[in-house]
Each structure stands twice: as structure tokens, then as C-alpha cells.
Length: 109
Ligand code: SF4
Image 1 (cartoon, helix red, strand yellow):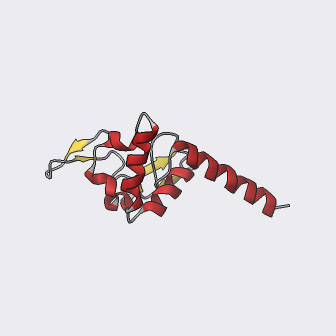
Image 2: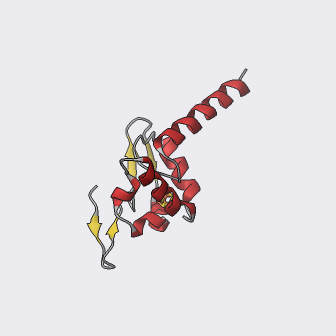
Image 3: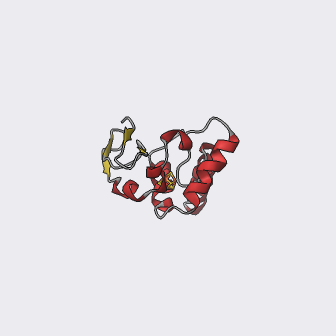
């Protein structure tokens, strides 16, 4: 999905407002919550930064986002590798996912 210019003059993030079918698990996950995300008012590039300073900028915007939890869980569930989602960088999401896998393994033994 490509970014489009809104009537407010801002660019609507490609994250906003679509329903995605995941061929890996046959799920159709609603993404309506994306319509409430703070990122809808910023260019997509803000959330796909090239360096740590850019990640910090994205995190600041996510910090006040009303759908930060939904966003993070979506990114984790869909194994999204790139960009800032739910206030977390790729590295942070990998750590969260690893910690959860360890917790699940520990709980099952
Ligand atoms: S948490 Fe960040 S990336 Fe996710 S919807 Fe909100 S502003 Fe956008």
C-alpha cells in the first residue's frame, strides 16, 4: 500500500486503515485501530528511520498514541521486521518476542 496525501495536507501512513490477510495463518486481522494512530498525521518515513535518532523521534510520537498496545501486538503477531511499531524498534520487538517465547516454554515445562 502506498502513502496518499490527505485533505489535511499530511501524508496518510501506509499503516492506516486496511484489513490484511495473513497467508501464514489464514487469519484476517482487523486494522481499524490504525485509524486512531498518531502516525496518521506524519509521513511514513518517520516510522521507518535509518538511524537511532530517527527511532527516538518515532518513539516520541508513539508515546502518546491511543492505540500503542494494539499496534505493538499487531507488529509482534505479524512478525513485522521493519520500522517503529507500538513505540518499539525492530530490535526491541525481537527482544519482546524472544522473552515471550521463553516464558511460554518455561510455563509448559
Ligand atoms: S503506536 Fe506508533 S506506529 Fe503504532 S499506531 Fe501509534 S503512532 Fe502509529
